[in-house]
Image (cartoon, rainbow, N blue to C red; front, top):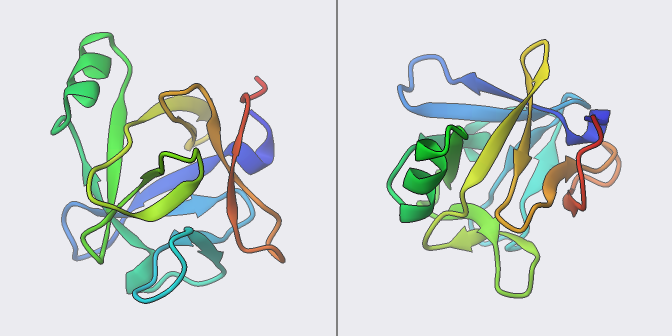
Length: 138
């Protein structure tokens, strides 16, 4: 995978079930109350950059797990989920999660693939945003 397609999922100390999603650039994926529906990237890691790691609650997750593909959904501190809206854009204001299939990129890094085959990608630190890319280059 290319660097901007790599993320590290790390447990939050003292918060069982909660993780951070750190980009290769060192920024953290977050969701803010009252903010834009789009996820953002920040250079720090505070409560809004913590995500509940969810396994197997959706039929799509169960099917992927049975196929041997580890998949997750990510729930924000707001109780909403990171995923794809009907228009194909990323959002943190969804009531149900989009399953992300994890691909091992080595050295503790993973790529997150959405059901339509695109991958989560981090813009450069100045842009502070996430994007979906058509493929993860190995």
